[in-house]
Length: 50
Image 1 (spheres, rainbow, N blue to C red):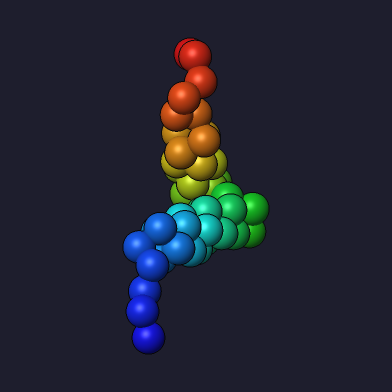
Image 2 (cartoon, rainbow, N blue to C red):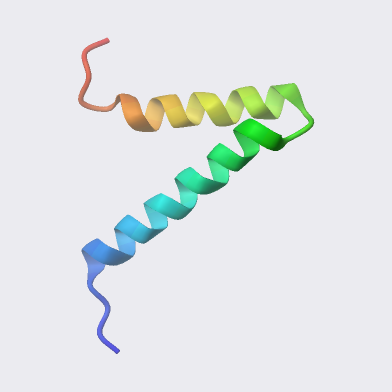
């Protein structure tokens, strides 16, 4: 089966975001939740003016 790099990268990104969102919303440790939220903010802040 042929893999398309862009599709593989997109699916990996979706898996990463899903895992971080799950950590940010359900984990019992507030520090870990905060770190997961911060990583999500950084991932989605590229291309925006700060």
